[in-house]
Image 1: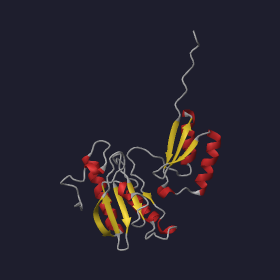
Image 2: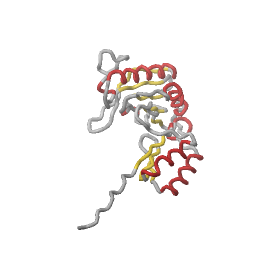
Image 3: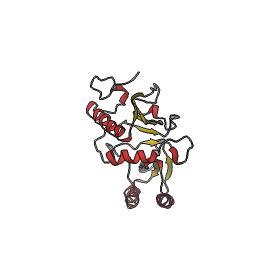
Image 4: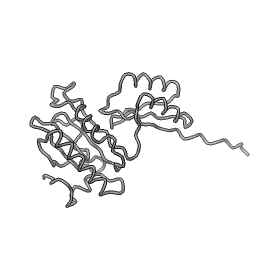
Length: 211
C-alpha cells in the first residue's frame, strides 16, 4: 500500500484596496519586497485593486501585519465599495473633473460605512466618454460641463444592462447625498447578493428613473 501523504494546504489570496487605483511608491516597494520573501504572485484587478495570490496559509497573518503597518486596507464583506475611476483631468485632455478628488469625497462621507450588501459597484467617469464603464455599474457618475449625471442599475454579465439616469447636472454635494440614499435603499431592500437593477423599479425607489 502506498504511504499516504498529507494534502497540500490551499493557497490564500489577499486583496489590497487601492482608492482610485493609485499605488503609492512606498507601498509598491514594500509589496515587491514581500513578494520576493513570501513568494506570492500579483494581479491588478478590474476593480482597480491589487490582489496577492498563491500565499501560503502560514504566511497570511504575518503578511497582513506588515502591510497593515503601512496603513493598507483589505477587501472584506460589508465594506463600502471603492469607486472605479478613469484618470480624469489629471492626465486626460478630455477630463472635465478630478475623478480622484470626487472619489475621495465619496469615501470621506461613506468609506467607513459597514454592513453594505454585496454586489454594489460604483464608477466615476471624468467626461461623457465614460472610460470607467459607468454604464455597467450599479451607481455611475458621469461628468458633464454643467455638472454630474448619475445613473443607476447598470450591470455586465451574460445579460448586460445599461444604467438609467436619475439625476442630471448635479453638484458634488447633490451626488453625494443621492449615493447615500441609494446605498441605504439597497441595504434595506435586499438580504442577499443582488444588483441594483432588480430594485430600481420598486415604487419606493428614492429617485424617478428616466427612460
